[in-house]
Amino acid sequence: MTGPMTEKLADIANAMVAAGKGVLAADESSGTIKKRFDSIGVTSTDDSRRDYREMLFRAGEGMKNYVSGVILYDETIRQKAKDGTPLVDVIKASGAIPGIKVDEGAKPLAGPTAAIEKVTEGLDGLRERLAEYYKLGARFAKWRAVITIADGTPTWNCIKANAHALARYAALCQEAGIVPIVEPEVLMDGAHAGHDIERCYEVTEWTQRTVFRELYDARVALEGMILKPNMVIAGQKCAKQGTPEQVAELTVKCLKATVPAAVPGIAFLSGGQSDEQATQNLSLMNEIGGVPWKLTFSYGRALQAAALKAWGGKTENVAAGQRAFTHRARMNSLAALGKWNLQLEKAA
Ligand code: 13P
Image 1 (cartoon, rainbow, N blue to C red):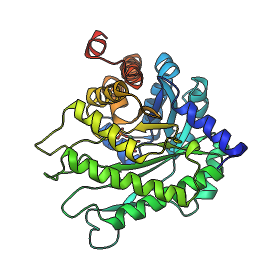
Image 2: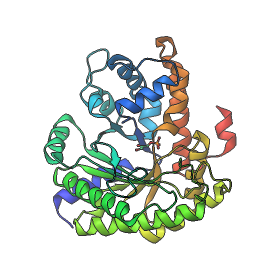
Image 3: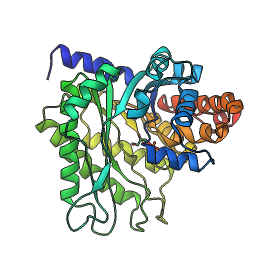
C-alpha cells in the first residue's frame, strides 16, 4: 500500500521509534490505575489521577530526551493540567506524540474456555471514536489482545478471534490517519507450571503469524503501524526460568521469523517484568542487532513503578517522582540503543 496517507502514517510510526526513544504507556483504565494507587495508599480520584499523570508528562528531560509518544486513556486525553493547559498540549510541548487506548477491554471468549480465554472488544462505533480522538490530538492508538497459556490453551479460536479484531482495528485507525499499535500479548503472569520459555516461543510465533496474516487480509499498511509484543519469556510461576541472554536471543529469533521487515518498529510491553529485567532484556536484544526494525519500549509498569512509589500522592514528592521517572526513561533509552549496563543503572 502506498500513497500520501501511508507516507504520513509512516512518518508518525518512524517518529514513535526514533533512535533512543520509546513510548510511555500511561493508559491504565480506571480500574487498573485504582489498583496502582491502592499499592501506595492513594485514593483514585479525577484530581489524583490528573496530578500523577501531569507529574510524568512534565518530567522535563525525561520526556524530551527519551519519550516519543504517550498512550492516554479516554479520561486523560480530555483532562487539563492544574493550570488549565490541556494535558495533550503538555505532552506535545515536550516533543512527544499523544496516543490513545481505544479497545474496551478483554472479555471472556464465549465457549468451552470462557473461564480462561479472552477476546478484546471495542470495534462497534470505533470509526466515530477515532475521528473524535484525532480531533483531540491523538496520532496513534493502541488495542491490546491477551493470549493465555494454560492447560489446553491458547485455542485457535482465541488466537484467530483476537488477531481478526486487531486487524479490523488497525485498518480503521489507518483510515482515520492514526497509527495503530498492534498489541497481541502472550501473558507471562499465568500460574501454569508448563509455561516455560519454549512454550512461550511456540505460542508467540503462532500468534504473530496469525496476526500478520489477518493484517494482510485487512490491507493494513505495515509501514504505518507499530507492533507491541511480549518478549519470549517463561511464565512467572514456572520453576524453569530462562536467562536474560536466552530471552533476548529467543525473542529476536521469534520476531525475525514472523514480523515483516516493512514494519518500522517493535515496542515491547513490560508485562510484569521487574524494571531492571525489562531494561536489560531490551538492551541485550539491541546488542544482538541485525534486525530490520527498531526495537524499543512501550512500557507501563516498568517505566512508572519507581515514580509512582517516589511520588506517593504527595505534592512535595513531585520532583522525586520526576527524577525516578527520568532515570527509568534514560535507562530504557540506553537499552533501545543496546548501551545499558548495570554500572550505569547503579551510578544514578
Ligand atoms: P506494561 O508495560 O505494564 O505491561 O503495560 C504496557 C501496556 O500498555 C499494556 O497494554
